Amino acid sequence: MASVVKTVRGIARESPDFQEERGAKMINDRSQHGSDFITRRESGWLIRWLSAGLLAIAAAACATVPVLEEVKIPVYPPAPALPRFVYERTLTGSGDVMVETSGDRFRRFATGEQIRGKAFSKPFDIEVRHGRIYLSDTVSRRVHMLDLNEKSYVEIGVNGNGRLVKPLGLALDDAGRLYVCDGSAKRVVIFNRDGKFLGAVGGEEMLERPTGVAVDPDGSRIFVVDTGGVDSQNHRVRIFDQEGRHLGDIGERGSAEGEFNLPLNAAMGADHNLRVLDTGNFRVQSFSPELKVNNTFGKPGRYAGDFSHARGIAMDADSRIYVADTGFGNVQIFTSDGSVLLSIGERSETPGPGNFILPAGVSVDLDGRIYVVDQFYSKIDVFRPAFLPEDWPAGRDYHLTAGYSFELIDEAEARNVLAPGGED
Image (cartoon, rainbow, N blue to C red; front, side, top):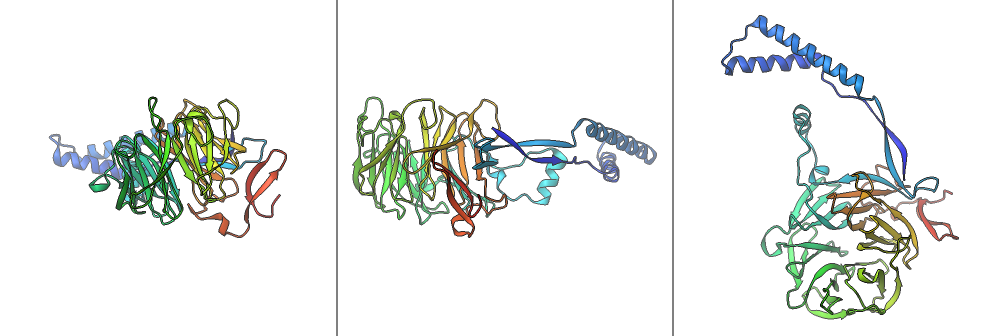
């Protein structure tokens, strides 16, 4: 599942001059503020003693810490297949994106302090656009906004009319408006791209158990996934406009085409088709802009393309479909018509890159990077298309850059791969 792609080298240590200077300052502070008197001769002896001790510790560290260390970076699919995606990084809080000053770095070096910031508590869903991440958190009752390019962090929904109680599913429209499904308040709250409250739709009289949301690219229709319950027939998708007017519904409880059993989330594709994650029926249903069923795929099972407990769904700019499944502990990628391509991640009780226990949300930015939320590990794992350079700016659309294209490399297996245009 992993390939060796880089090495880490080097050990940080203090110079003897710096150690002696720091030791002298400590002794001087004690002679001024403590009850014991230390003579200059004793101070010099103590400085030399401390310096010798620190140097001995550093030497011991050099003897026990390996100078050359291999770091295994997961790639998908694993060798010998051609890699499509490479694990890039893990985010666990605001400290992973905010700019750290030289003073902050020195303090952490001197004290052993960890990077400060707001950690994720129990993240649920995610939306990413142009390197700006929106992450719902059901325990801290807010949406974390992290901008990878601006190196900034904002908390959304913590006060006022837009206060959130239990934020679940998220969606974005082309204007950058953020839609947050609040499961406890039974409404969808709308914010601008910077987190300013704009309005809300739904309410207790309209929604029974809302969990997910999707939206037309222009924001004209808001699709709210109303999961329902064991004793309810209201397993449906309710449709509202920006003013909160109820425009209609899709489905009811059942297993027939166009019906749902405990639907959890939905995603709108670039092809303007709505995909609904029909979790209880182990399938994804696709609806045309006229809200007619035009495709269904998935079944219960334990093989590629099957579903166990699907919880998150997303679509990329080319209408490929990404489904996070807590039963499998991975994300499966499908073509727009439902043919399985590959999976990313694996179920593991050992924390690490690409290891998941409760993957919930998934999102794909315009640069093809995949962002996967795991509730158990309270993290976001980021996976970069294998063709994309490591320093490619977050969210820059590769479609707009000459030399990059989407290629079909194996028609027999109907497997798609992202690769630099013009290369075999």
